[in-house]
Image (cartoon, rainbow, N blue to C red; front, side, top):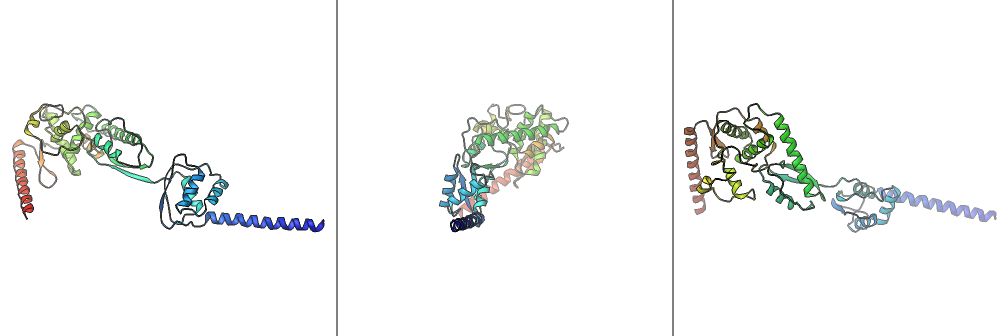
Length: 335
């Protein structure tokens, strides 16, 4: 009996040593560098189980042993902690690293850039083309109420959520600007600020000109002059659904529509695009000038004038530049 007990004890000791060795080996293997030789994107699908994730991880060469991966997840209490999303797994990541990553929620971010001056219809079309976003858009948001910016989104975010963020941002920008507006503006509400800011946004792409362009329209409103802004006519023709693709016809300049600021007094009924923060700020704090007119100057900017005579001279100068550009284009095409 004494020999039997000794043998049993020896066996138990050996088994214990083997078990401890196995545990230590598993722990080492779980934390050792993995087989991945270059960074790779891994997607945890909605509702994916630990077994499904581990099998795919091994199939894609991210972990060496899917069973050991599951064992490590259960040992650390994270077997039910997978977070849906798209993850960037770095080369050499251990199983412990991979598990920590796909249970962290630190998913890949994607940039969605909404430029200043896009219409709400154009923004919606842009979001519909962003493949990582989900969900339909039921209605076009109100014109002007989407803040242009670069937004960071995750795969699986909905388009409606992104639009809601844009609207909240624009409302915050508008409220802040209205609270800091200059005295004596001929604008009765934040909504009117948004309308005029959208016109300023469409009239110039030169940042340092925004304040001067805004001053022209503010001066005109104060004097009861019509705004005479070409972009408002174009919006009335296209309803914001893309560019006009041609010049404005004389008949369109004379046609009475709510957006033809050559014919109607004051502001058009709605914004004509989504203005950026700087255009909004330019409207609530325009430059102090006596300018009433502006026209393109051939450099990408505009020539400003206080009187009609001065403006007409600027117009004639611009027409000469246009003719020269047309002639140069014709000569280039012939060559």
